[in-house]
Image (cartoon, rainbow, N blue to C red; front, side, top):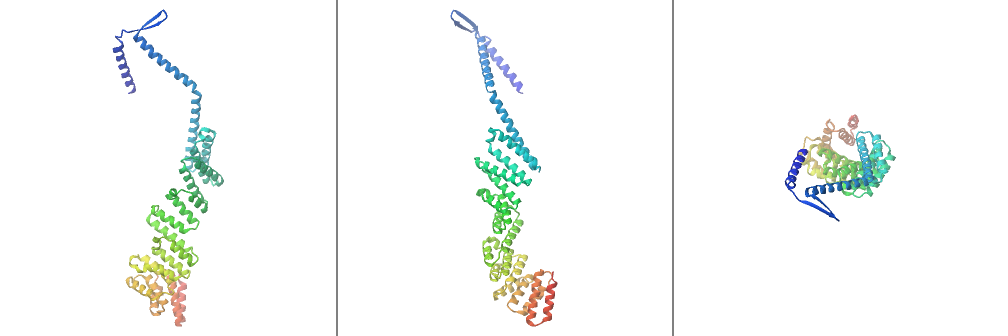
Length: 415
């Protein structure tokens, strides 16, 4: 196609020249001293165009000769830059291919090429990336000393390079991940704390913070981070609920006295305190630490709205109420009797009511409830054992040693 266009242009130029120059009878005269030179106008125009073309060609040839060293230097620089880029790409490929020794050598080769060329050494972003690749390879090879050296160099280059904040943030995130691999939670949290606020809210940064908080045994911080991840939809709904519950359990179980338990309960998110299973665990911890009033207070809102809960949730809060029934008032009897009448088939409510009756020394009704629970194989072993022990205590008060022995024997046989 290009050849056809050139041929058309040549034909057009020939036609125009034939029309304009074919009948041109003009002369051009040159005078110097006593000499005179005449030539046709057509020849003069041809010589003029040829002279201009020759002059331009000569100027270009001289310029090419004078700039030859500069172009040779630029060519060598381009070759070195191309070699460095190839080495960096090779390091990436080898790292992704799990050939970490080769990746480390390729990254070092790229660094050597850049360092040996002053013009390329100014590209500090390239150098920082190469150092990061070398550090990642060293981490996979368990060479922590070399990894830390390369990481520090990458961070230093990123700080000195304007507009390289993304590289510095990436280096810190990688360093935090490596610290978690080393089980160094303090270093991971320190690196994550140095991130900019916007970077610290990214999903990857929050995931790392969650892992570091759990590793450092800081369940409340881990719980707050997990809630942020749940808002960012980093987990499925079911997984998020299970994770939040487990972290709340861990925070409550880690308390050593009543004051710590109360502080942990207040630091929980309102959504966590509205979770029946979390409240049940808090009540169980309160019972173990000798604070039954607190436990009952945390469970009371759920008994007021018992119909809105699932059967498993009702069973959990009913079971958790039993350890904190010490000193309960008659209002709890009314509340439990109402719940039992609404859900007569749920044995956990009968279990709680039986122990509440025993706490209020209403032995006749308590015995019926506790015997029904103790003989029910669908109930958890801990609840059945506790019921047998309550029946044994009741038999001891009544002076029936044979029944007391049978109750202890039944409790001992439970797995």
